[in-house]
Structures are given as structure tokens and as C-alpha cells.
Image 1 (cartoon, rainbow, N blue to C red):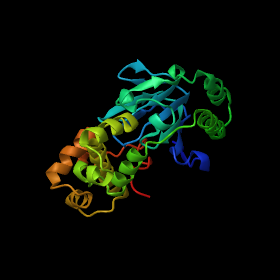
Image 2: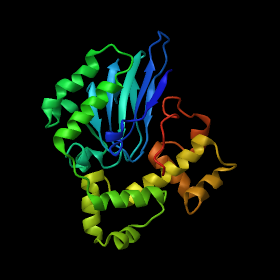
Image 3: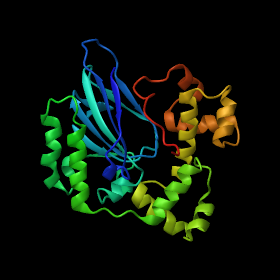
Image 4: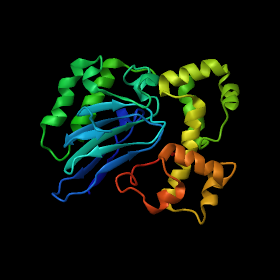
Length: 269
């Protein structure tokens, strides 16, 4: 099942973490389920070949999705090619001018974006039979960026950097003190830019740190993972892991899904 991870061009690097492509173009019948867990990042999903369904509902061919705070799954055709973009946490607001909170645990057809004049560029990605649509995809995003002159909220950017670098082990009070903002102001600006509260984002980052360690198998016991990620104890770690994945850490160890194990976790550079 071919999987590719593509770095963005330099002008897009402050908005785009990476682009990716996942495909199964064989005739072999198999269950193709993409398990979605909270990763702190919004993105774009393109069904270049095949269809995507969620709980029996067919999703748009090209969609923009927001923060995920609970586990879900996407069911893919037996033959499929998915192309996607993983943005940095505040990109829905900075790049598209959206209130990120409105897309939390949801998605929208990109045809519904106000910038409809860009859609003809996006359609070129679908019309090509090229094995490498990333140049066209990045061209679309670059043109969109030049026309819309996005502005990053510096307070939110600073808060995001602090939370990610701390692996989620930072309190809202610490953020307030460092940023000299009231809790209400910080939460309002953070939700608009990122889609969730800073406290929840910190919890997701801590979970992502533990997931990163599990993926790399860099531990002897699960209690080591809990301790290294900053959880009070293993039971706290287990409850949080199940909240964001739907399964216990022990189950993840035994049944790591091949469609998700290669996706990078949100950890400090």
C-alpha cells in the first residue's frame, strides 16, 4: 500500500506541515479504514481515486477539515488514492480566514469556501492523471496565499510554540502569565485561530508525545510512556489515550493500523 510524505515549498512552510499520498490500486479486496485521532492539526483531504464515507455518508471529493477532538474513522474504496495536506494548528484562520472553532470535529466542501475564484486551480489537481499532483496542489495554495495576505495572531502563535515545545506540559495559568492575557481573552483568541481551547490543545500535544513514543517503540513498559509524557500515573494515561483513539494503549500495541502508523505526530522539531 504505497505511502508518500512530501515537504512543502519554503513559502508554504509556515502554514503546511506536510502533504501526503496514500493509495491502494490493486484488485485485492480488503477493508480500508482510516482511523482518525486527535493530532492538533486541520487539513485538506482529496479523494483522487475512489470514494470516502463516514458512518455511511459519502464525503465531498475535496474537503477542508478542522480539529479532531474524538476518534472517528473513514471508510475508503477497495481501490483508492488519497492526497492530503496537514496544516499547522492555526492555518484555518490564518490561511483561509475562517473561524476555526466552526470546523472543530467537522469538515466542509471546499466548493463552499468564499474564495471560489481559486477553485479552477484546484480542479486541475483532479483533471490530471499525473502520478505527482503535489506541484499543482502547492501552486494552488501558493496562489491563494498571495491573494489573501494572511495574518497570524502573534499571541496564539507564541502560545502554540510554547505548548508544542513543552509537549503539552504547560498550564493555562503559565500561558496567561507569559502572554499577559486574561484567561477569557486567551481562550477566545485561541479558539478562533485553532478551534479548541489551549487546555485541550495541550492535552492533545501530551497525547501526541505518548503516541510518538509508542509508534517508535522507544520504551520498555507502558508506565515508562506515561511517565515520559508527563501523566500523573498510568491510569490517567490510559484514560486519555482511549479518549483520543477509542482504544487502550495495549490494544494499539497489538493492532497498529497500517494506514495511520506512518503519519507524523505533532512533536517539537
